[in-house]
Image (cartoon, rainbow, N blue to C red; front, side, top):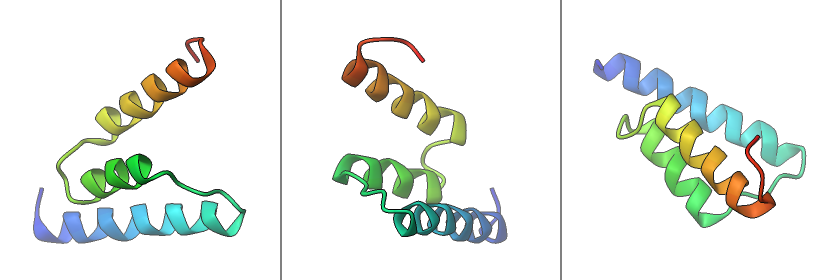
Amino acid sequence: MTNNELRELRKNVISVMKSFELEGFVYTEEEKRVFDKIANGELSLDEGRAIFMQDLTKKYGTKL
């Protein structure tokens, strides 16, 4: 990923997070860490999505 692509990705991740926060959503520290890794290119969107889905499955006891 180029520097420009990483900057754009980071900008988009921050925008999405702020949008949800404006709606009243509060992120856990772990969720913030995952989003930070996505924004830095350390995790792909699919990898991040898989982590969130796994966490939701553990929390609610069912696969979504």
